[in-house]
Length: 290
Length: 290
Image 1 (cartoon, one colour):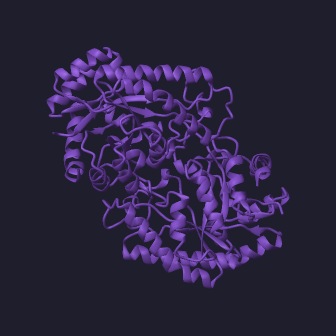
Image 2 (spheres, one colour):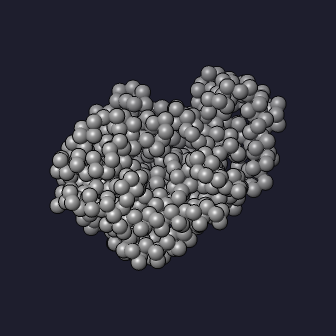
Image 3 (cartoon, rainbow over the protein chains, first blue to last red):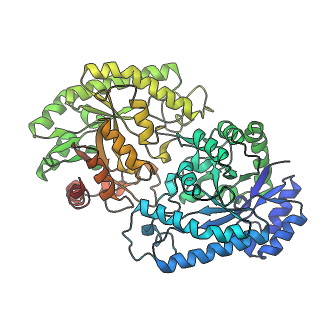
């Protein structure tokens, strides 16, 4: 099994059908679609399209943004997440990546409809507790549909505005309230590479059967103007993929390795160049250590 | 005792004498100078100037950049740090802030002279171990001069290029090889606010008598083009100063609270406006919880 998976964010301008064609043409065997690409044709059709091409679905990206303290927003986000779970089930995705959301104070800045009632709310511990509570509310719905909620700790760069889960250990602590087939964690190299406890946390994630996905891309500097789009191609930055890949392997993870790159320079290239580069870098920098 | 201290980086364009005058004029009782401002008149003169104005020296910023693997660079950085220790002693600064440096791969990007022999060196664990080793080599020199080395964990945003110490717990683990009057840690709100283990780590730092300095400024978004200059005025961003200040106080810290703001918009203002704003924000957002 060739474990490299193309996350559709890496080829931002391709439709799902185009991404599937490009991936299969270059020998890729798995794909991790974002919901926007899935929704363009509907999840059932998307699942058929991917299956017909002989590809595995590594994850569906993404659910989440469940950190609000406002009843209306909580209801809307739960409804959206139930829809994401349905899409994952229809698509045949066993893992739904969850980006949990930031502090209420950031919602207006993020352009989310209807900012928080309390724009001064900076209580990180409370936001983290709400995330744990919302996960608890979504688990039964996801379990019935055979979908695992994959908590993605995010780089602390994004703690204010995108994800209040900041370490793998913290995600594992939240996951611990649920069985390992209900809640997992994502090991995304970009988000966790700096963590002094990374080796131990990956080992723990493996021992607890929680690794939902190993996602890769590189930490490159300087950051892009829109920091979200700073993710770089493996080998272009500072991450030691040999070390992290070995830890993930030693933890027993045998699933797909998804390349997810948000980067305007990468998006401007021909998709075929991006995918062939990604394959080359995966083959030389990652696969030998898995 | 009024615990607010003006770090000279906050008024980037003032000489030390100007900063001292501006601070005392607005009722500030302490100052935390950077070495460039001290070196302009010499550490002994700088110490006299500050003492004559009746100000305390909260810290000297900074030593560090001790993560290199190259023998020549190690020698140069040790020599520079011994000089910083001498300056701290002459100035009357009991705490020397240490920003430990990034990965060798970043040195060229940072404009440091003579890049690393191995520009592909991404080994974070090894860089962290070298930092611990260099601290061990500097401790006897610092102890003899009555200067404590204050390890500053930096936001993981800077792990690649500025500071491979990423959490307070990690800094405390390195400090643990030395007595509490030899090696301390800096609690800088900007660098540590996101840490899920922050409450426990601050309590531990207090219990181990390691808190060298409580530095404050806010996490504001978007980041500046030069990310180093993204530090904001307290109250303008996402940090819950009530919570963190209370933890620092509960940990037994009774020293100065240094405001260190790297921010081009702040630097463009009149220094008197910056200092009076800083005082107002400290009085309302920080001091009540100390």
